[in-house]
Image 1 (cartoon, helix red, strand yellow):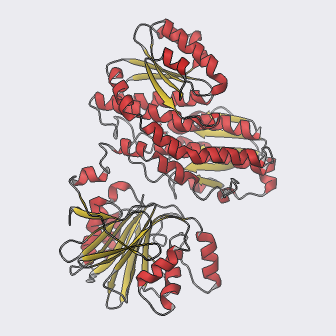
Image 2 (cartoon, rainbow, N blue to C red):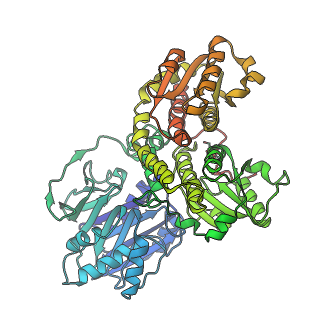
Image 3 (cartoon, rainbow, N blue to C red):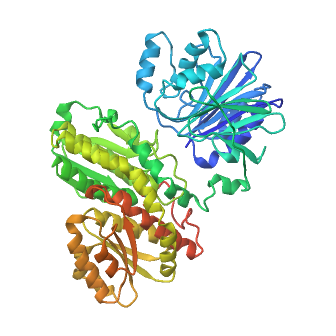
Length: 611
Ligand code: F6R
């Protein structure tokens, strides 16, 4: 996610902003910028790339101002360029805004602003805020605080906002709506940031804004208000953590933090893509009905964890749309002489957007005339340039090498895409689409329930720490979960694990089962439940220890389980979004039990840019 820093006081703002941005670097970003007020005007410098690029651009700039804001941007709307980097300004150049989150109604606001004559220079959703503030401040003129309160009422979505006005140089206005903002007022100064690490060099007493609060920060004081402008009491929290613990938000590792961020990741992957009636709006795939109706086959290409989300997507797309789907490992695809034409749609899935094999597969498909949709978490990544359309997963940066929240983001984006195709081609009744969307809206709360099992999962992981092999079995979409569970375990705990179609056991792998071999069975899918039961009985009869991922309240599973993780009920095709979580945690705790570092497994990289 992006990082925000703001400073007002008697010291030079620039070094404090840069230091704060450095403390937030771990969150991932692809461009950075600062705005400093001095002598009634603002100086803004922004650069794509690393903070050092920004520092080089600032070298010798001599900004002396004592009020400023800075931002490290993780691109969501518009690629990571100098012009899309924050801060963004209004037409007068006197107001500067930095923003974390997504303004969902930015397109409508942009159109209205342009109709009024505003000139917007970036592709971002954020810039509309600066121009809306321009209008609101100019009305009387009046304090930035009042203008901000007026403008946030027009915004939909999630926003952590920090704004300054060159002609009102004694204050910073900050807003929190579904995106964290924290304030500190040490030693006659005021500092604001989106993460505690940026404040820790200055103070350990911080004021986290509550949701839907606005702060007016001055040197040595802060006043809080609700969205109606009513005053609110600040809540001061004393931080005991050191900086590295603060970066991880109190979690021991990024992987664990990212697993626990999954309710938010799923919410973000759905945000702005569904209307109130449950209809899907995928502006990204704004192809004519003819094009969508013309598709005769779909091929999904991906690697590793992304391949597993593709496996689950194949079931969803075929079920909802009745379009046949092929699934290929991207590294195999172009060597098998695939049959494609201009009525084929290829879906390339890559959280990084840089995986060499997936890029090559996508280019190969384009050369054969196919249309390409990319599913990725990284705006501006290579796959976005090669694709005809891009579905972003909007999960925020993932620091841990093992993909967790991006996997869930992919599952959500792919399910939405499958439903969208069915909706647009008339393959599914509107009520059915809306019913599935309603089930998807329940997922974040259900994910919280699954995460609450973490203590039990940690205990179960202890028994895995000294085994040499684990078998993961499933059927249908449960097989994709089994394969993903096995991959997670092997990549971070280095325990050998196999993901297997449960029905295939008797054709060979069952020979591996003997007393004490752990078998993880994913058995939440109702239609294949009895068949999974039979497989679990088979392995138990041969002495296996069974770890079952089963529907909540399932007494029969309880009777057969060495360890049981009960999962809330959802639609069968959505079960991977819940069932994967205990397996992520199992892998994480097994790695910890073995004294390994889950964030940086040996021999692996976050982007695999070689074939
Ligand atoms: C596993 C993992 C990898 C990636 C694979 C593809 O946790 O992260 O298996 O899924 O390297 O990466 P992307 O999705 O970037 O193409």
